[in-house]
Image (cartoon, rainbow, N blue to C red; front, side):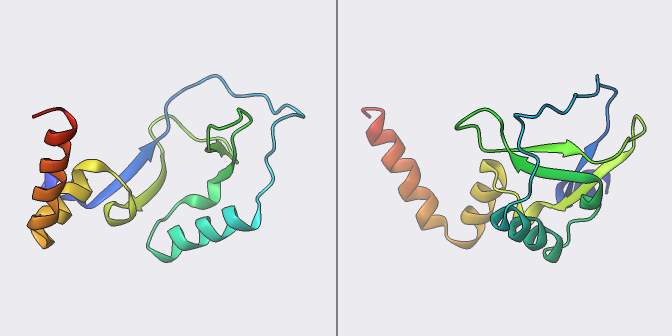
Length: 117
């Protein structure tokens, strides 16, 4: 039962870390695209996002980053996101294998061909 619960949702847990100092060159603004992403994640069932800030990375080409908007206690859950909306290889492979095994087989064969088999 515990394994099924863990597979059903992903949770971020606070760990003690040195607090990051906000720098002027770090853009913490929320663009329209980021706001839409946060709203979509909430609409899909995520919880606890109000204590977090999603922003563009200050490092060019590194995508997005998440900052704490408030202090969290060690071990406190930061957020919970349904596994169905997390783009991860194991979850998507299992989903494709169950729903469309022919696509999975085609991907495996293409990978083998790429490797020279």
